[in-house]
Figure 1 (cartoon, helix red, strand yellow):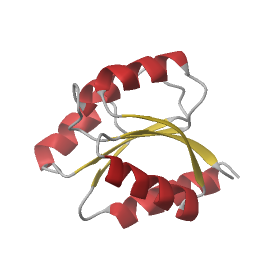
Figure 2: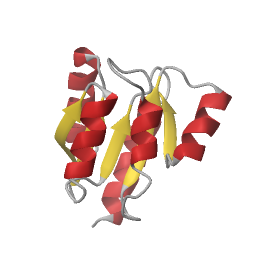
Figure 3: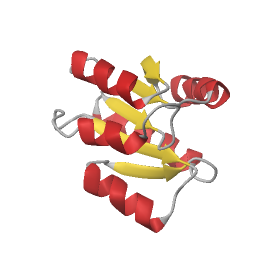
Figure 4: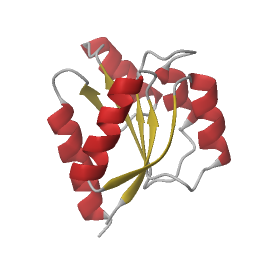
Length: 126
């Protein structure tokens, strides 16, 4: 079953590649995207039931991904927030989890794990 994904990524090339991967491989539909924290927080707040998974980069054009993750704390139990970043230090993984992220993946080395995670979510929604 297709799940609705909100993507927070400021790099247009990476964003386009992620959309392709997610829609072709993970049975996801990217419903919208943002390149900055304020834009993402506003969209998520105004569309509380329009997404199943939010995939968030930490470094954005404006603000940062941790602010987006924190803003998602009041989400439904079935909604997942995933951090996808090149800054995958143990401290940043722990901080992301503490802010409410359900998972953290290294953008440069763990894309396959992200896709596996999304496929697992898709099977749960069947």
